Length: 224
Image 1: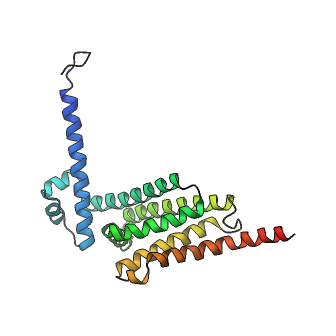
Image 2: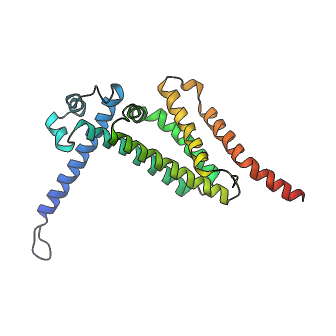
Image 3: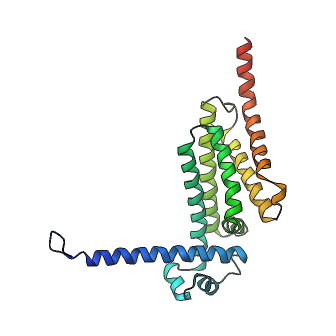
């Protein structure tokens, strides 16, 4: 096939297919590595085992990832990206701050149930924080989560749903702590101790406490 300028498009089409194949292969290796890290751990897992899980050769894995550490870091980055993207999509659909916080909590419960391998890898990374690169990436992930939750808290304060006197960052970390508790109980096999109903109850208690001062002030204003 010729372009209007008389140049063949065969080369560009072939390059596009190669890029697509490369992206698919890279994603496949990431998924396989996540499974391997989840059932063993970062220190024990080897590139040969990851290659076997991916149905490819060890040299092919090294073609896409320079080292096991780079592969681990990329998985952690992917967890952060997936989490933030999911929250952003929910925020686009739910303008109410309190309802959005409840929705995020329900979503986290579903993620823990459906994608436990991602959860395990992120928790494993906490034991590797002596490594500066791993620590930096984890800090970036959690800082992003807290910043996003803090923005929702501010929206709630603006809407009169959350007490303006409360420190935004502290409240955001408290909401994140509920998700962290959910993750921990799941990993320990204590899922029955923290059902969706209990997660929602924990969130509602925090929301009620956060909004109680605001409601009290409104009630006083009404009485006056």
